[in-house]
Image (cartoon, rainbow, N blue to C red; front, side, top):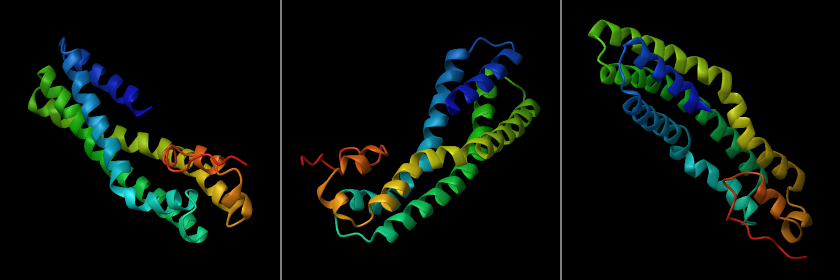
Length: 173
Protein backbone atom coordinates (compact mmCIF):
# COMPACT_ATOMS: atom_id res chain seq x y z
CA UNK A 1 0.00 0.00 0.00
CA UNK A 2 2.96 2.33 0.46
CA UNK A 3 4.30 1.91 -3.06
CA UNK A 4 1.37 3.58 -4.89
CA UNK A 5 1.63 6.66 -2.66
CA UNK A 6 5.34 7.03 -3.25
CA UNK A 7 4.94 6.35 -6.98
CA UNK A 8 2.29 9.05 -7.20
CA UNK A 9 4.60 11.54 -5.51
CA UNK A 10 7.51 10.52 -7.71
CA UNK A 11 5.48 10.93 -10.87
CA UNK A 12 4.25 14.28 -9.58
CA UNK A 13 7.87 15.44 -9.23
CA UNK A 14 8.74 14.22 -12.74
CA UNK A 15 5.68 15.95 -14.20
CA UNK A 16 6.37 19.16 -12.26
CA UNK A 17 9.91 19.26 -13.63
CA UNK A 18 8.61 18.71 -17.20
CA UNK A 19 10.77 15.62 -17.50
CA UNK A 20 10.05 12.31 -19.14
CA UNK A 21 12.02 10.10 -16.75
CA UNK A 22 9.04 8.17 -15.39
CA UNK A 23 10.71 4.76 -15.69
CA UNK A 24 13.80 5.92 -13.79
CA UNK A 25 11.58 7.50 -11.13
CA UNK A 26 9.65 4.24 -10.75
CA UNK A 27 12.88 2.23 -10.40
CA UNK A 28 14.21 4.60 -7.72
CA UNK A 29 10.89 4.52 -5.87
CA UNK A 30 10.62 0.72 -5.91
CA UNK A 31 14.18 0.47 -4.55
CA UNK A 32 13.48 3.00 -1.79
CA UNK A 33 10.20 1.35 -0.75
CA UNK A 34 11.85 -2.08 -0.72
CA UNK A 35 14.61 -0.74 1.50
CA UNK A 36 12.02 0.84 3.79
CA UNK A 37 10.12 -2.42 4.20
CA UNK A 38 13.36 -4.24 4.92
CA UNK A 39 14.22 -1.71 7.64
CA UNK A 40 10.81 -2.16 9.26
CA UNK A 41 10.62 -5.96 9.26
CA UNK A 42 13.89 -7.80 8.74
CA UNK A 43 16.02 -6.49 11.65
CA UNK A 44 13.53 -7.87 14.16
CA UNK A 45 13.61 -11.49 13.03
CA UNK A 46 14.77 -12.61 16.48
CA UNK A 47 11.62 -11.19 18.13
CA UNK A 48 9.42 -13.16 15.74
CA UNK A 49 11.10 -16.44 16.66
CA UNK A 50 9.35 -16.92 20.02
CA UNK A 51 5.80 -16.89 18.58
CA UNK A 52 6.98 -19.11 15.73
CA UNK A 53 8.49 -21.58 18.18
CA UNK A 54 5.30 -21.47 20.26
CA UNK A 55 3.23 -22.32 17.16
CA UNK A 56 5.62 -25.16 16.32
CA UNK A 57 4.97 -26.58 19.82
CA UNK A 58 8.47 -26.00 21.15
CA UNK A 59 8.98 -25.45 24.85
CA UNK A 60 8.18 -21.71 24.90
CA UNK A 61 6.23 -19.91 27.58
CA UNK A 62 3.13 -18.44 25.99
CA UNK A 63 3.46 -15.19 27.95
CA UNK A 64 6.98 -14.73 26.61
CA UNK A 65 5.69 -15.37 23.10
CA UNK A 66 2.87 -12.87 23.62
CA UNK A 67 5.27 -10.27 25.02
CA UNK A 68 7.56 -10.79 22.02
CA UNK A 69 4.71 -9.80 19.68
CA UNK A 70 4.28 -6.50 21.54
CA UNK A 71 8.02 -5.77 21.56
CA UNK A 72 8.15 -6.59 17.85
CA UNK A 73 5.17 -4.29 17.16
CA UNK A 74 6.62 -1.34 19.08
CA UNK A 75 9.94 -1.76 17.32
CA UNK A 76 8.28 -1.93 13.92
CA UNK A 77 6.42 1.32 14.64
CA UNK A 78 9.60 3.11 15.70
CA UNK A 79 11.64 1.78 12.78
CA UNK A 80 8.81 2.54 10.38
CA UNK A 81 8.45 6.14 11.45
CA UNK A 82 12.18 6.80 11.42
CA UNK A 83 12.84 5.05 8.14
CA UNK A 84 9.91 6.62 6.31
CA UNK A 85 11.01 10.12 7.24
CA UNK A 86 14.50 9.52 5.87
CA UNK A 87 13.50 7.37 2.91
CA UNK A 88 10.59 9.63 1.94
CA UNK A 89 12.97 12.58 1.76
CA UNK A 90 15.61 10.53 -0.04
CA UNK A 91 13.09 9.23 -2.57
CA UNK A 92 11.86 12.64 -3.69
CA UNK A 93 15.37 14.11 -3.70
CA UNK A 94 16.63 11.22 -5.86
CA UNK A 95 13.66 11.44 -8.21
CA UNK A 96 14.08 15.22 -8.40
CA UNK A 97 17.75 14.78 -9.28
CA UNK A 98 16.84 12.26 -11.99
CA UNK A 99 14.23 14.68 -13.32
CA UNK A 100 16.77 17.53 -13.42
CA UNK A 101 15.57 19.73 -10.55
CA UNK A 102 17.69 22.59 -9.21
CA UNK A 103 19.41 22.45 -5.81
CA UNK A 104 16.84 24.61 -4.05
CA UNK A 105 14.03 22.55 -5.51
CA UNK A 106 15.72 19.36 -4.27
CA UNK A 107 15.66 20.77 -0.73
CA UNK A 108 11.95 21.46 -1.11
CA UNK A 109 11.35 17.94 -2.40
CA UNK A 110 13.24 16.57 0.58
CA UNK A 111 10.96 18.46 2.97
CA UNK A 112 7.83 17.29 1.15
CA UNK A 113 9.13 13.70 1.14
CA UNK A 114 9.89 13.76 4.87
CA UNK A 115 6.47 15.21 5.68
CA UNK A 116 4.79 12.62 3.48
CA UNK A 117 6.77 9.83 5.14
CA UNK A 118 5.58 10.99 8.55
CA UNK A 119 1.99 11.21 7.34
CA UNK A 120 2.01 7.76 5.77
CA UNK A 121 3.38 6.14 8.90
CA UNK A 122 1.16 7.96 11.35
CA UNK A 123 -1.92 6.97 9.37
CA UNK A 124 -1.07 3.39 8.51
CA UNK A 125 1.51 1.84 10.82
CA UNK A 126 -0.83 0.88 13.65
CA UNK A 127 -3.21 -0.93 11.29
CA UNK A 128 -0.30 -2.51 9.46
CA UNK A 129 1.28 -3.93 12.62
CA UNK A 130 -2.05 -4.99 14.10
CA UNK A 131 -3.02 -6.81 10.91
CA UNK A 132 0.13 -8.90 11.16
CA UNK A 133 0.13 -9.49 14.91
CA UNK A 134 -3.48 -9.57 16.11
CA UNK A 135 -4.18 -13.11 14.81
CA UNK A 136 -0.99 -14.38 16.44
CA UNK A 137 -1.95 -12.78 19.74
CA UNK A 138 -5.45 -14.25 19.56
CA UNK A 139 -4.05 -17.72 18.86
CA UNK A 140 -1.64 -17.48 21.78
CA UNK A 141 -4.38 -16.28 24.10
CA UNK A 142 -7.00 -18.74 22.87
CA UNK A 143 -4.93 -21.89 22.69
CA UNK A 144 -2.37 -21.15 25.37
CA UNK A 145 -0.91 -24.38 26.68
CA UNK A 146 -4.00 -26.48 26.13
CA UNK A 147 -4.27 -29.91 24.61
CA UNK A 148 -5.97 -28.36 21.57
CA UNK A 149 -2.73 -26.66 20.59
CA UNK A 150 -0.58 -29.68 21.34
CA UNK A 151 -2.65 -32.36 19.67
CA UNK A 152 -5.41 -30.76 17.69
CA UNK A 153 -5.69 -28.10 15.07
CA UNK A 154 -2.34 -26.31 15.12
CA UNK A 155 -3.07 -25.19 11.59
CA UNK A 156 -5.16 -22.38 13.03
CA UNK A 157 -2.18 -20.83 14.79
CA UNK A 158 0.01 -21.44 11.75
CA UNK A 159 -2.40 -19.94 9.25
CA UNK A 160 -2.88 -16.62 11.01
CA UNK A 161 0.37 -14.98 10.09
CA UNK A 162 2.67 -15.22 7.08
CA UNK A 163 5.53 -15.57 9.57
CA UNK A 164 4.15 -18.95 10.66
CA UNK A 165 3.65 -20.47 7.23
CA UNK A 166 5.91 -23.44 6.79
CA UNK A 167 6.81 -23.58 10.48
CA UNK A 168 4.00 -25.85 11.61
CA UNK A 169 2.87 -28.85 9.66
CA UNK A 170 -0.84 -29.67 9.81
CA UNK A 171 -1.69 -32.34 12.35
CA UNK A 172 -4.06 -35.08 11.27
CA UNK A 173 -6.48 -35.96 14.05
